[in-house]
Amino acid sequence: MLVFIMSIRMLKGKVIKLLRCVTSEKETLYASSCEESAIRQLAKDKKIYCPNCQTNVIFKKGKIMSAHFAHYNSECVVTNSEPETNSHINGKEILFSWLKQNFPTADVDSEVHIPETGQIADVFIQHREKGMEGLRWAFEFQHSPLSSTDWEKRHNLYQSEGIQDFWILDKATYMKFSIAKGITDARRRNELEKAIYNITGLCYFLDLETSELTIDFDFITRTEKKMIKGYERKTDYTYHSPILHSSHMNQIKIRMNEEFRHGVLIYKDIESRMERRLSWIIQKFKRKQKLQLEQEFQEQAIKKKTFAKDKYGQETADIFAKFIDDNKEELDIKSIQGIDIPLGYYELVEDIRNMQDHDFFDKYNDLIEKLSLNLQLFEKIKDGDDLINKIIGKINYSFQFYKLSFLIDQDSKTLQDYLISKDQEKINLVGYVYKEYKEVLEKLASMNPKYIKNELGKIKSSLSVWEDNPTALDYAIEYHRLKSKDEIDECIEQIKEKIINYNPFAGEDW
Image 1 (cartoon, one colour):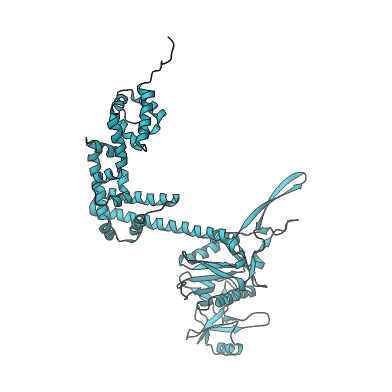
Image 2 (cartoon, one colour):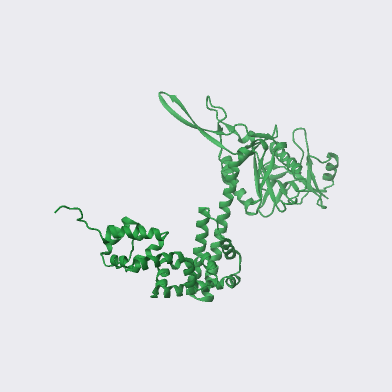
């Protein structure tokens, strides 16, 4: 039996028309293209049905009323569609024909009930073609009034089910222009079109008489000044730039972004001018994606921190928590600053988001144990009397050890061996100044620390120390920040001249 997509439904006392019906064999017929006498006979035999509520429908067509299907007397179970008008029907038919022509291998239907959201899409398309498998689009032609709040609710419902919704406004109804004297082409944009534009990035208008599509993608504001009763009045007017941005539906194509599988309506003549707006749309998707991933990361990180506490104890859980937080922070900082991010950071974040708790700790247990051991060994290094240990203990900080890059680079080396190899050049500089200029450094250590700190700052700020009673070695260690032995020699000469051998009374005539 046939089930046709076009039928009339009753919604709050208003007639709503359907464009298709189906049979028990799932064959679909369309009111605009079916053979009239055959359809009337099928309707008389009660062999055509509403695709939504599966009750019998009848076929109607007159001199004024366009072809459609209608329920007998019952109200359809799906009643959230807008009341039908000939304009609404014509808009849907234009979109339906255009989609069928451009996507011949896809499933395209009119008036499709979507159970997940409870909505009826004016035209619904499910893609089968290679590269677009699984994509679902809902095209809505909006002729009657609709508040921006109601639109956003319906838009969010589609989005929640992974359906991209294209809202096409009736140009005759929605595209309005200023009627101010002397002003042409200035737009009066209502809340619905502004909401669609601001949230989706574009706004589309369909001219039913010419089948031309207008694409809003860029606006400018101009301030007009007028003298009224001796006072200057300023009024802002909004214009689309360019003014002409319409094309026949035959020229309209859908341009896809592969990363987000998102499509936009476009035509060749304005494609290059739309690039900035299209980039804005993609950046908005990236921000949304980042927020979603961040939320997933935080949720899974909390679960793994709880798992670590239950299985390994509070101390290990605290170390693991800082390990997660520091590496996520490092990833965010590098992303913001545009620095290349090692693959390991992405892998860690993805593992936190996607791996089961026990699998995650099986994979990262060795790193966590290495981190814990490093923290213990570093305390011993800082307390040691060995010159090398004092140097590496002074120029390194425990927060470095939490970085994934540090642990990966350390590999199988002990902490001491790794720090020595990592800081060898700095160790050499400190060793050089301590050996060659120990007498100078000891002289500094014997003088007033506040005075020395102030004077060293005048020579080179990086040589100042912060200890209350610095030793010669404390002064030497600050030289790890210099670049060469020549720079050290130059600084030492200035220290001798301006601090050690400085005579404030030199040249005075007594």
